[in-house]
Amino acid sequence: MSERGASGEGLFRALHHLETGLMALLMVSMVVVAFGQIVLRNLFDFSFLWADPFLRHLVLWTGMLGAAMATRDGRHIKIDVLSQLLPPRGRLVLNTLTNLFSASVCGVLVYAAYKFVRDEFQFGGEAFLSIPGWIVQLILPAAFVLITIRFFLVAVDCARQAWRHEAAETPGPEDGA
Image (cartoon, one colour):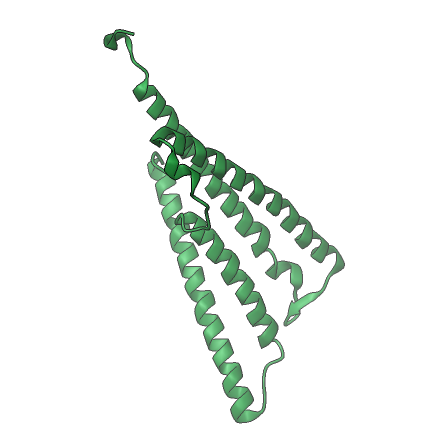
């Protein structure tokens, strides 16, 4: 985003560091717990019952957080054939539309994830170690909210740039228009 305020820039930087730190913590936790399980099983014929479901949930968290980070860095999957054929302003308009569409799709996924977590809350169920399943599934709506916001902000930024590009190309009174 090109015109964030000073406080907005600090907020985005803090979120960036929080995401990166959380991802590092998740990855280290997965490696330590998985390695520990392997050692316990092979050397002591013992394992923790909670470790496998814990690892499955860590994979979910890592995947969702990774998707949010990919969106943050503009490294998400995109099909970019048409934009190569367009002039710069057309590219900006197309990027605005595709990012708005992506934000809309993710917005629908926020609602679906919310319903999923709400149902899990209502019907109960434990993930591991007596932790309710809905708590560990909160990453689903949270990540989709973050992704939705990011797509929307990029769409707004592209729209601003397209508007400025149009204004720069429109002849003013000094140009004889």
